[in-house]
Length: 439
Ligand code: SF4
Image (cartoon, rainbow, N blue to C red; front, top):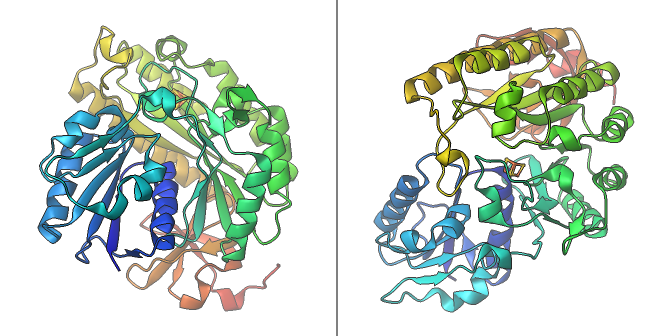
């Protein structure tokens, strides 16, 4: 029985796809092992957004070769689609597969026999038109379920449309069946994932279904306790979706909404499809219906043309907005994007300073959000991680909770009172046995 190991870089989508590909190997009789367990085959799933993607790829291939000098090494993922030839030149790589080929890996690389020259199987991205159902399993308490792939937007900084192709989706019927299968494995929480999740519903270029209908149907799947929407563009986050989440049985009060900049001038340069006013209005709408809803924000600093005034406009906008945390990205040039050709490049040290300011703001926002939740009782889903005798879990509205490690709590929902914020910034709870479980 050949042993196969996986290494994943990047986003939730990559994790869900690696997980699905690993199950394909297992179905064919391969044994999945840890990266260091002298595998016969290494599959490295790369990301184009990762900083220094090429260096990371080199490093992982080197490590793989060090562990099993004779193993077969295949590279898949966004970076493999964007730079197949360069990757094939990395010493020790046996195969590179593009977006249209990665799910056929087991059949295409039949037997995984090393050849003198690396194989490059990467079609043009326009060939990636198929939707491949993917979800992560057993890696975490939460499962990431991919419902949509690719993107038809053209944000000027983004390579994802080049790496993943056009927007396409699974059908609601298929997603419901997949979710039922996931429920049968004991998973309690499913995170609905996509490249542009709110654009759900395109099949073969035709809009045939709607995101709102998907979430309404998922709400009725027995066995899953929670659904979380991973991220949704503000222009696609309709009143209907917000109102549904506010009243739904299982969709938790948590939205992650990319903003990218609080300056309308920069948003235009980024080719985003909204202005700051729409974003503020979406946040206000959510908060009017769900005062304790968690709202996370993606923001990019140091985009070409972002002056100090523009940045301060973003800072002030975020400071005044009722949001819960930020994911801060420092802009870095990506080949083949419009942004990389734009003038008024922001110096690296200025980008770093701006990032630091927003990280501090994020900590402040998170702390304030956590403080607003203290004293309340919330259902916590505990995860399978131990750190110095402590374990962690999340409330529906994404407050990170810490409690004394108890293996019986893993993957369990417990109703607990949130009492204080510790020095690590997580919330401590009343001991389970001293609290009434409210169901
Ligand atoms: S919406 Fe914009 S940033 Fe997001 S994947 Fe599409 S092009 Fe990239």
